[in-house]
Length: 526
Image 1 (tube, rainbow, N blue to C red):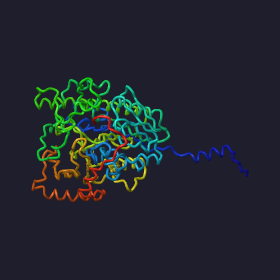
Image 2 (cartoon, rainbow, N blue to C red; image 1 turned 60 degrees about the vertical axis):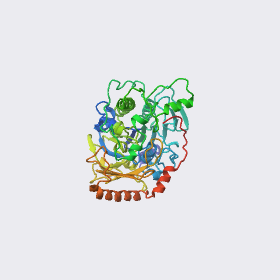
Image 3 (spheres, rainbow, N blue to C red; image 1 turned 90 degrees about the vertical axis):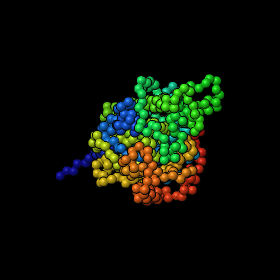
Image 4 (tube, one colour; image 1 turned 120 degrees about the horizontal axis):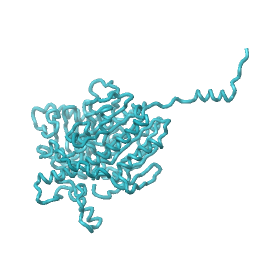
């Protein structure tokens, strides 16, 4: 019997076949985030603005996937929320617990993009970053650079991977971010690798400047007032103390009031920012009644806010369309969220920061056709520190033991057994800027919320969310709730201890008082 030798070239070919790795079929991840997007301004949540200002493209994600009703931030302010999302850790652990005087994010620490990158994902970030230090853990990035990293709506400036600074003269930030995301998806990504793209907008953050083509959106519409528009803050001294009132604390620049001519730079800055602080009262017309003036400012503010939302919704739609047309949609997890909620007139306010429902809530909508059944709704209690472990889980990447968040993949797989979490912990540290909101911490369960304001006042608040969903009546002195309050305090202090926050009040106040300079300088009024 003859033995036949394999020719060297054939042997090499067969050996090569044996070494060829299977293509990586793990899901792509498109993480979409806006800034300050209220649930009430997303029509999928059926809030008071749903009919007048629908968001059809964001709604597509909910309709084709799952809507989470109880995703919460651990600290309702942009930088700390973003740091919590990246690290899966509370602000006091990842080190970035406040924007004002809190320094910058430590980019050398562990983040979920780094872990995905190390495990075969191509990672990219396009849009808002707002963490001071340059992004790490990304193969490519193009992030808003000017105005403390907030960026500007018009003529935005970006920092790109490689350290380049790009000035987008004559352009609008939402459009630039959309074009950047589409360009990366079409021409820059490695098609042999799964990708994780963070697609992040400045909109609809203050100062709410509508883009080209959106200036007259809602021009002939009267925006309805929310149920708590005329809140008098009875029984809630911290709420009464805040500088967030539409009538009393919106400055002239925010409401697009034209300044006098021939002002110096300093005079213009002072004129524009007038209204930020308590006692800086101005009116567009001295003949207006209090009610007329408040409504005038609300209509002006709310319409500009919603115009910025509309532009972002359209930009999101274009990227979703590309996923569908390119065949990427089936194996791409699309996540829509915002770094925190926002007040669009609720309690007579704008801005966020408080542990109250409108600012603590984050939208969360997820579409993944390969695994998630369309049209689902979930009420489990989730936190923004849960994003990191969940995304790692979805990408079949090991979750480090020091991550404080909890993967909600079992919910997505319909394998959750009972309540995902009994209660969530919240902590806000900044004072007095920008809006004079008292530092506070608290606990929220599915029914109750207990808050402690501790900086220059010592006030506790309790809300029964089942009977008082708008948080109008502080029940802390009600005798019938005494046992509930005691039980909530036990749960709260247990959570604080478990999460390395068992500090004294003097230590907590010192965290607020600390002032660490940021890399970026303030260029104009917030």
